Length: 183
Image (cartoon, rainbow, N blue to C red):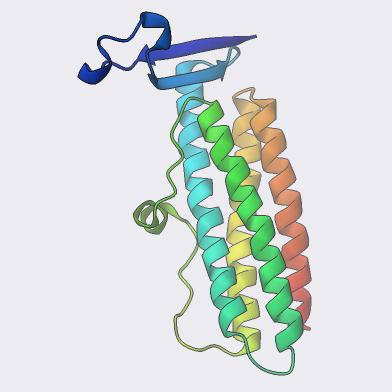
């Protein structure tokens, strides 16, 4: 069962509209078993993880665009494939934030301020350095997802815990794929 929380839009231009056709500025379905405080705590953590996903994705693209050397083709494709997966993770996280009554914060400014992922050098790196940097970023993201699994479980939100488990599983796999290039 869910609880519907709505606040009607009160824009002056819509004052003459019939009540049943008024646009809604805010509407959310918060699972009934979560209190507002619990949902808020989860949204805050999920927004931090969204920032991590976006930061990791940008680092993967940086590596994809700039990798050179004898393993170029393999790494170029692997960074791009991993990026595509990380984008899906970010989208899943953002959707859960909204499902919990929040706003997903994915602007460049928010990501830069909120991510736990260390910045990647903007200098040209060797293939091995790109591999190491992306592995480190993925490990940071993965570790944060494991913490989210625990937090969501303690708050009784098994859906968020399941989402975090699915993402952690994928991050672990992609980290392994990329890290295997270190030898």
